[in-house]
Length: 145
Image (tube, rainbow, N blue to C red):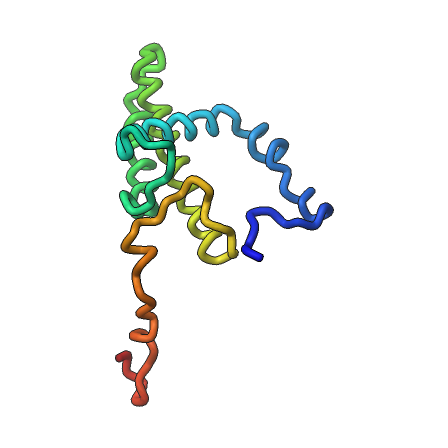
């Protein structure tokens, strides 16, 4: 059986309060992330059903830091009476949140056995790439071959 996102044991499943512990904590933020996903899909995958095309951008850590810097700059000059500026500022927060969720999802898949997210698409080169990890094994003299 393939790995699942949630445990199957009913008692253990109660440790994942998705509505009470996520949706009900962050409804506006999650709505913003969903909107950011749609805008990004329309930009990067025009005419295609929504999906996360992972090969198009994978530098989440660098993007997170850039979004944090941009948020600070935008907030320093923010005119809260200007709705367009407020929307630009919040869109930056949504972009930051999207990147943080993307990184977290990929880490859960890589290190905790979570399945590939249903709307994620790995780039063809990543799917078809041969396993070259043997190149990182030390040789007989301890040197990396």
